[in-house]
Amino acid sequence: MRVLRDPNVARLVFSRLVSDLGAGIGPIALAFGVLGLPGGGPSALGLVLFCAALPNVVFLLFAGVLADRGNRARILVVAELGMAIAQGVAAVLFISDRASVPALAALAALGGTASALFYPAHTGLIPQVVRPEQLQSTNALIRLSSNLARVGGVALGGILVATIGSGWALGLNASTYGISALLLIGIVVAGTVPVAATSSVLGELAHGWREFTSRRWVWLIVVVFSVSNVGFGAAVGVLGPVVALDSWNGAQSWALIMAAFSLGTVTGVVFAMRIRPKRPLRVAMLAVPLLALPIAGLIPPLSVLAIASASFLAGLAIDIFEVLWQTTLQQHIPQESLSRVSAYDMFGSLVFTPLGLAAAGPAIEAWGTRTTAIICTALVSLALLALLDPQIRSLRAVDPANPLGPPATAH
Image (cartoon, rainbow, N blue to C red; front, top):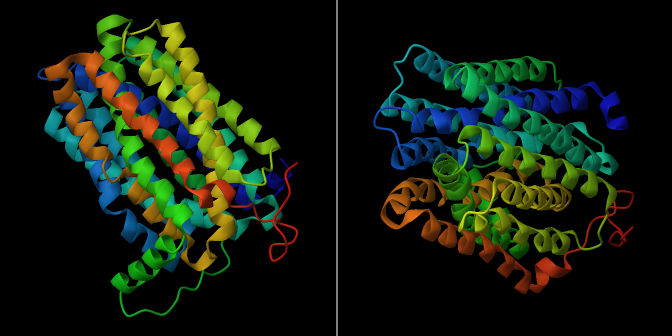
């Protein structure tokens, strides 16, 4: 917690706390808002989510170049404001009973474009404002604040949708993005990170690609997640809300399951704060199969309580992975190309996810929720294949006290 004495770090942490409170509300409100529209349904929801995910993938690589060239803190402000506008207009449409699938799809595309700007800049900004020995603690603290907010956000989202409707819930989401932008405005970064001189944006993308592909442990993990995220995204974005409407109590049931997932992520962050594994990627990847548990629970489907318990374990796993993965990237990737490598990481991990979201609705309508859940479970489980690679199993952590010396030992 000592890192919070730095005003820059404190602003980063609290901006994530506020923004992710709203981000926990948003998906619940949007999913059940679309499902409740005239002409809405699984395919309509999948279309809206596809429109959000596609620009998030398409613009990621250029966002990485932009983040390595410019002021990363200002880019984060622009990203948050873009998401605030998208959610705010969607809220007005729902409240005024003018919401339609095409309009929501267009706004989702705007929000996805803003989101694409966020990830590379955020990953690159952290090591700019944090000392090397505090890097893992800061990553964990940001994840902790984010996940605590999501616990409250998803629970609040279910209550708001059930009581006052999706429009007002989305309005609250928009306001949290605006507050986050105000917090980020105060971050001061001394200069910009110099990038290698190249003739064009494409040249800088090529440089980032060489940095990305030169490390097998990076691109191989991204490849397995490009498949795994198809199943996870389709299950969480479309399949789960449909099952909740068909078999349980709608938005409130799905919000409980998502709140359990977020609570698991909090526990995962606390665990990740305390460990310093000698081989961080081995530990990170061994946690990943737990992500398939709640999706497998949708096959019968099991009770809400059973799937919430499985979701807790999945949340635990994903944040153990995320903290160790982000710290490993920040330790092993040169600072001047970190945002571009992070962009390739995010791009590769999500490249097929829009197709999965678009296909989820037709799959449910053609084959039913049971078969779709089986397919999603199988896709998520494929991530474990990364452990077959010896480089992933054996990559050692860097000792922050002696980055050029022997690898860190486990504690």
